[in-house]
Amino acid sequence: MCFYCKCKTTKPSRATHVVTFDDCIIVVKNVPCEECEQCGEKYFSDEVMEQLEIIVAKARQLASEVFVVDYNKRVA
Image (cartoon, rainbow, N blue to C red; front, side, top):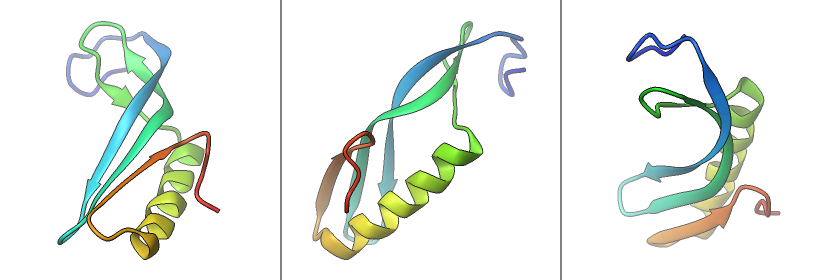
């Protein structure tokens, strides 16, 4: 159930996840998610959230100001 609009249905989708730290912006494109069919709110699975944490941690080591990565082409 959607936290915001209480709709009971979602559909598989893709999202762009943006994280901002002090002087750095990290953009992760094409992140798999479930999207509320009524309001469009995005929900990530636990597995996807774990991968996002890994991607963001690695990107923070590499990035200076802006870092853009495709979820499907993860940072090695």
